[in-house]
Length: 435
Image (cartoon, rainbow, N blue to C red; front, side, top):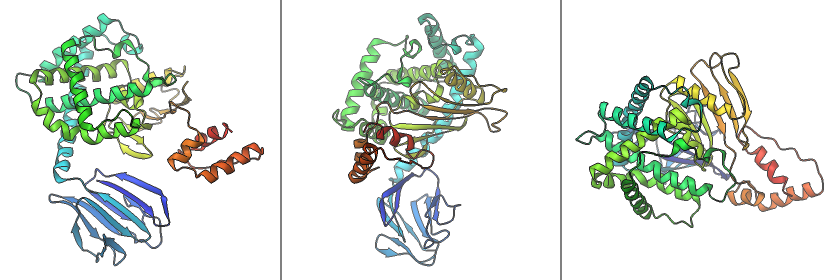
């Protein structure tokens, strides 16, 4: 479920939350999931709960809660469907309720994702036991022979753990879907990097190439991706962000049909392809962060612990659903990232705060300072410099304010820029330097 909410006197300050939990409390108290900061709002005004029948809304206050045009009484519970407008004076909330089958699909994917994560951990540990990757793990360039050996070993281990057997399983089809989803997004990420200044996170290294690729299968995948892009309604004239959102919004709905129609051999190839990519990302790259770092629509990545990786996408914080296979792997990948600026992190120096060559900011903490496992925050630097017209277009500034700031700069006035973390202080300062 998606919720947008704003104060009735300030529609420009509209916030958004993607709800994955089974219950959401809304009210004035800081303990609520969504906090409406107003003395007119009850401590807890509304409870939204997902039941076997779908989402329901329960009023938890005496008055002041309106669903559509009807005021709810205290304790009254009503079902929610489609697009709903909830008014809790002085706030307006817009709710987008997914269909029940979409809810079930997301729960199935969540379960399969947990199984997939355990499987990756098992494959990775088995691979470490069969070959010495200590040298390969410390470099970004790997010989084709070494890569081929790794990929063939992964194929063997896949068969041993029960993947791509004679009969396709639900997990096989899920992994194949993840593989195709990753390929489609990777193409879009590559397009975003064309013609732009060199992007630190989009550099191509030898290990990213699939040396065991089968040309006929790759051509078949190319045609399948083109067909899916047509189904998405992908228009190459659209903004890249909109095209990525189209894929994220529509892929799994389309995959339900395509996944049943694809030839089993292509499904198996997609599974093998994706497992190889995931393992090579862990061994040679940045693991589950690899695609997140390449995405042009993600501005910040926060690794809370090995099991929880949050991202900021279009100003909205959300759980990426990705995870590391272990704390040791998390720390190894943190060491690779900070090594890019000639820094090191270990027990004697467990905290690193650095700026990468592209302007991205990195903050990393490991034991003994971090008691719940290694933590990492990356504030990505945008590949294209933002200007004042961009701020006006996005609604961050009005045209009048931009002209006022321009006059201040041209008249050599002192300008103080203040704000909380992530509010755009540096972005605005860089924009003002263009005047």
